[in-house]
Image (cartoon, rainbow, N blue to C red; front, side, top):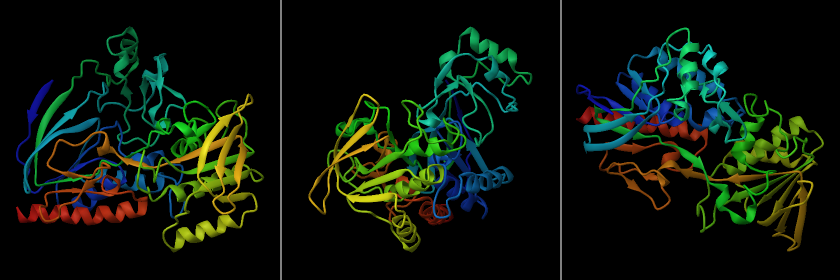
Length: 424
């Protein structure tokens, strides 16, 4: 592994994470004159928003906001991005931090034109992480059609094999470099903004809800990918076990959330996510029966409440206040959901073709705590210490938020970062 050190960068800001919060923070700071570095661990910027089919409040596709931000980054020489990169260590004090960054080899250089010839000759397939493993991708792949940078990746599983050599030989632009190595370098920055985002809670840990045992039980983020035109089913919502068009669908709210054994807190946006996904289903299947089991339906703000009220008018959408206790599957792949109606006290056994678990947001820092002097809550959220300053958490790294709130929060944290470098 090679190690490099940059020259001091006075007044610069490091943003850790290239999702919607990180992009907004970086652009707000760069466009008023500050040098900004974005470090993103995946091969592409965009974060979780890039995986959505639509997002609130206007039900926009992710291209709506991300393409504009990508263009702004490309046009702004003050923004420098590092993908497939992670922060190993942060040392120093507000106004003067030394940040060690490790970059994992991509095995494809900036000469890549996305011609796809490397993928054509690659026969090895790997689980497609972008689609939560619902399909396969080639081991030479473009992360997704909206990836930034638009550049292929060679999976390390084939490095050193004959197949990797075939990928190299297929590239007309000499963009495949199989000798790439991991490297580390140090940035000197005045402030660090942690935009490390969130991960869907691991539904396999929720034993009573059957995820992982029964193929026709999926998570809300899997539903987003399934509904997306660039998803594993090209936008068609189908039952995984047999590709049947579902006629009855159950949404299980608070799957693992508000539960002391899993996520004790409310993830804020799961209720709205299920309501939004009900519109996906309604658009494809006008006569499908949709059942939403909830503890409390949380629709914060006028526009979200209005959206909820409109769905309540749909005669084929049923809201049941009650927590799902267990699920089971019959020989035909149909799922039976068992719950207690909290209003009537009756025990319900509801059959469905498809069950969607509304799993909550778990901050990335809950599993991968940054090697930096930060306050982190017992649930993994990075807590802001404004008196100390210097390092700040933004978006879902700090608390569960929707896209609009994340953007607003990011603007404020960009200002906090600027104040730090101005004082130094």
